[in-house]
Length: 628
Image (cartoon, rainbow, N blue to C red; front, side, top):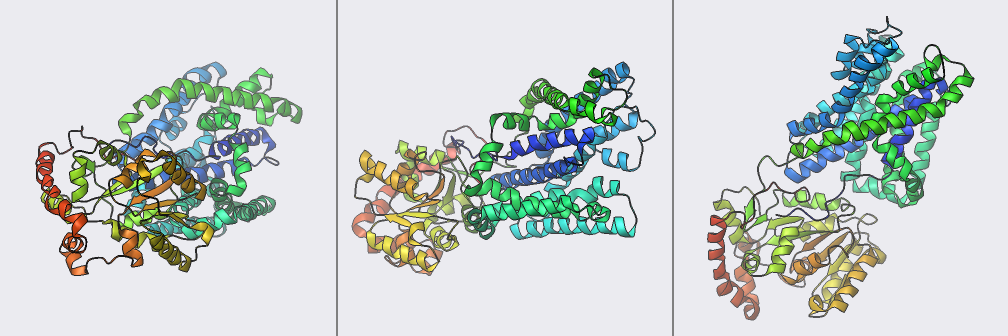
């Protein structure tokens, strides 16, 4: 199956700008401006963003392939983080150390490369050498790396089930907060321990993880976020200011991080999802901030080296942060410029060349997705598909087409090029027809049936007012009116639902097609449900996939008619034994007799071709990222 032409992007607008601001905060804080620029908060925001983004990536990989390829995931993390870190250590140990008489101690080198610096600092292993190369800031990378090691294992143990994930990250948040309180008040550990130990700071990452799960799986929460985004963001900002205003040492060593995590949850989710905050996003997406954000990892790694070099250039004796206020004010812009210069060099000379190996570590399915008649079949159950389609459609991906393969489709795929192209570009293919399902069982595939009628019967009740905007293309105004009545009973307003019953031949009429596209776009549809026949439904959606906006598109035939009672579906007993086709022929002989008793014989040579060329003559490939 071909990879979708416009796969959904993992890029989240605004976060690069936040990263740029965070590194700037850290640099200024390490110039002893921490009283007015909270560098520790910059690290906390970094933790939150890391948890949020990594959990999104892990959930996306699991959705696409049914599992997370752990060796490849760990390989991608190492490829992202280690090359620039290794070069930093090499420069500190082999160049700057001898030149500046700032030796890199073996313990600091080992702790940095093996992500143990936080405990190296906590236990004071490097405290005896106040003129050695500075690597203490690598403590936060150790916390993040420990998270990268544990997160996919914990999510796999939770089977990636949304409720279990919410419970998992909730337990991390509460557990870390409780342990900090015990460690500080009960065991009298230092604030350094509660600030930098992995077990004490994992909740700062956990809040970001929780945000990612809520964004993907909690339609109710995201509906509130989208509607009241400015108010939620404002509440988060007030909580953040409160966390900075309270100066009690016990609070700052324990509950400060919990309050900041909650405030970031309340600020970041509206920032990425609420239209009311688009102006803030536009600022964070300014080209200079995006440029710095992409190089923020290098900026964090190299900023102490930048401080050292600027101090030397200004003739400051000793650490720059110990200089007078005048020298530090003069050094601040120079230190920031040097930080971003070193970050740019690291990005261009180290990061980019290393990423040439990334294709070798891209996620792929443990086994190729089942292939029938050249189409990759989704391994997800009907319930899992409904859950996927209850989330927001991928941004920038256009129409995500779902098709349900039956015997008639198989026959038409052999001779209808445009229909075949629609299947090749489809987001998801399920097995609808009983003969196709039985053939898949004979091939040894463990894939269930997911008929269009069953899918629509489960999907429509899952749609939620304020979050979804369905648009139906149906066989008659009567069916459309009945659908509107069903959705009104679910709480939808008339401005949130729409339907159209197009005239015959609309699919070959350019003007009619443009009017239909404009109606769907104008409605801001999140779900497009076609209740017309094949192959015109699938071909039309595929042909106009980039003109419809970002939405899920389902071609379900008579599904809407069955749902509202405008047509009678076969009794359950016939459905169970795969005899629904006989019921339909009995009730619509003129239209279906030829399909099932004459044209359907082409199914046999199609099977023979599929057995001879299991991929339909296409080169085998892993299931694409856009197709579960």
